[in-house]
Length: 181
Image (cartoon, rainbow, N blue to C red; front, side, top):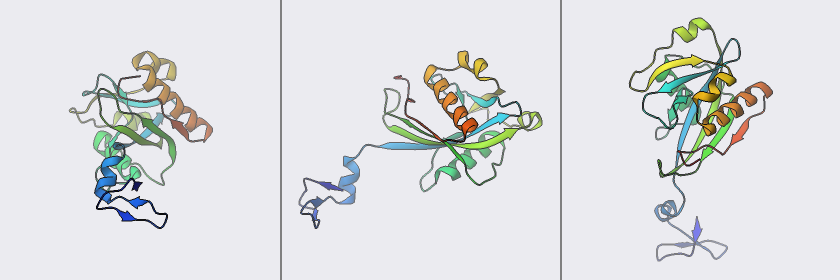
C-alpha cells in the first residue's frame, strides 16, 4: 500500500507514504473470483453443463462467482449444489488455478479455482437437477467429442484441468478470458 502519498498518507518506516485503504483500493486492478467443480463419469469423460446465458462460454463446470466473504471451496460447493443438486464432499482438492484478463465483454480480471469433484456414476448424472434459468443440458463426453462444441480457450482449459486430474499436478491456466482470445 505504498504510493507517492497524499495529505491523508501515513509515513512508513522506509520513508514511503502508506496510502489510506480506500485510496489504495482505487489504485489496484479489480478482479472477480469464481470457483467450480470438475467431474468425470466412470469412463473418465468430463461432465459439463450447457449455459443458457452465455454464447461465449456455452459449456461449463458447475460453479460460479464468489459471494462477499465466501472462500473458493465454499463457492464451489454452494454453486454445485445450486446448479446440479450434488453435495460435494471434502476435503478440497485443487486441480487448477485459472486467470483471465479484462476483456470487451467483462471489465475485470477473473481469478478462479477448479476443484476435483471425482467421478459420477451414470445414475448420479441422470439425477442432476438443472436450474433452467442457468443450464439446459448436462453431458459426459470424451475430449475429442468436446472439442468441436467449445471455443478454443475453453477447450484448452478443459484439457489443462483433465491433465491435472490425470497427473495429480495442479494446473495454472492464464489463457482464459471473456471473448478477446
